[in-house]
Amino acid sequence: MDNFSTSRNSRGFDWGAFIAGILMVVASFLLIRHPEKGLHAFVLVFGIVSILQGLVWLAGYSRFRNFFARSWVTLVSGILDIIVGILFLCSYDIGGLTIAYLFAIWFFVDSVVGIVFSWHLKDFANGYFIFSLIMNILSLIIAIFLILNPVIAALSLIWLVAFWLLVFGINQIVVAWMHR
Image 1 (cartoon, rainbow, N blue to C red):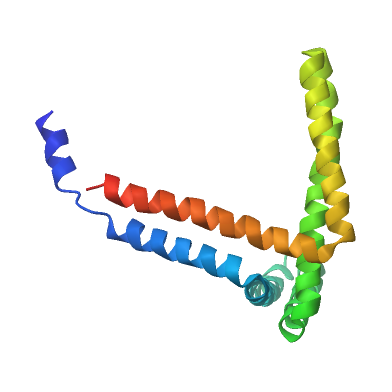
Image 2: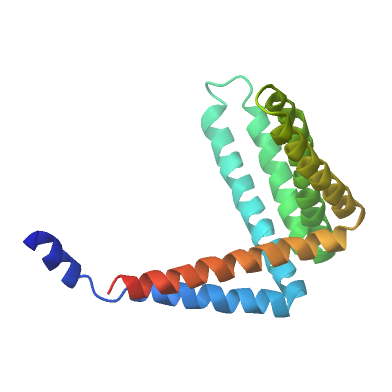
């Protein structure tokens, strides 16, 4: 028991969590205030990550070609990743539109999978099945709306990330105070 109280007293205020929390809250407000700049930042990050991933695939090709018959796949993937990354960096509009459609398609696929898997609930309880089916159909309608309106999809993505940053940032600030 004495060990526990000693370690608890020596922890102190968690400045790392506090600073991270403050930065996340500030970032969330900036995203909400300037969603177009947030989307540009996403496009920039995805473009850079795509180029880096392409370089990793190209480096992998040189290692794999001697012992893996289908190593050409890494070469093709690396080249495509680099092209996509350059395209994102050269045209924020194309990058933003691509991210918006990917976000909307992700919702669509998740909704269809949810509808398919909700049928198994029929074996357990009809009420759960109907509820799940209705929720997944609503989700599918939203996904179709997002596919037809990529600007709304892009803004939704920004707002979801901003909300996550706000919630997680507040949590980090609270954790910092709790550690003292």
